[in-house]
Length: 95
Image 1 (cartoon, rainbow, N blue to C red):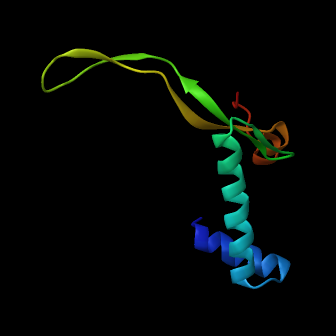
Image 2: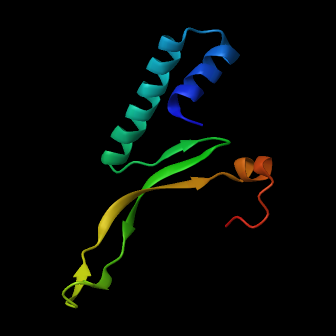
């Protein structure tokens, strides 16, 4: 499902104009991004948790030059699905 398809679907479900739904979705996403930038976790009950995770140092070799190097540790966004979401999806092998 694309962003525009999501906006259309939610608009139909709740009876709001697509422009209003788009504004709400944009605001929700912007608030999640702002919270993650500040180092906060964002938990949506029944859905999951967004958080920044630290990727460890990783060794790699440049395939062209064959020079070995290391990637520095970096922060990346992560998502952990809630138990409710997993059960609604019928996910048996989830973490």
